[in-house]
Length: 263
Image 1 (tube, one colour):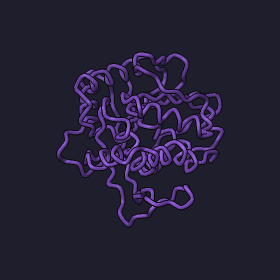
Image 2 (image 1 turned 135 degrees about the vertical axis):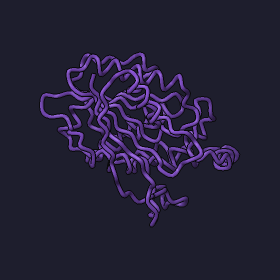
Image 3 (image 1 turned 45 degrees about the horizontal axis):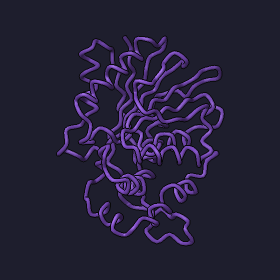
């Protein structure tokens, strides 16, 4: 696999969390946000969410990626993965765990997250891991993306659909960006998303994105993906500073799709 996620998690997430002042930890725990994170939230909130959700969300995306009809890049191909709402590089962790080293060296991973602390955590995760990608960087703006140097394109959204902070303007920007990619690519453009299937109080954003793309006249082939992934969280009192994952009989309630987009 080539990476030691647990070691990266311990140094980038677990240890900094334990070093936070107790009042910051308490504020993050008692905020009861259930993973909702705006761009201007306190740094402790981003650290708390990465601590509690990244391992599980990476597990889900890994299994979805492996189950989807997506074909990893072949010899001589370059795949650009554009990870929107990337958090702390969760999709990078998942793809690394799903693929071998040869395929990883054909992938450029490009991440964007509007929360500055999440971006910093993601950069540290990528730096700490031997992830094996051809390149792996965060960008400050989606406007900075250049589609001309890749053979294939994959847009990813890991647990972004129910984020309250996502605005209609954000969805329009995503649709315009993906539309540009479809228009410029010689291959079909793919999109892969994961989200919770048991959230009904928040209107999901990814279906809105699909409507925008349909209205723009793009052809969208949809593959629904079913996975069974056990939930796991870090034990609160891991021994010797080493993370231990608490298994759970419960499964993640997952909604996931792969879209193939053509002009």
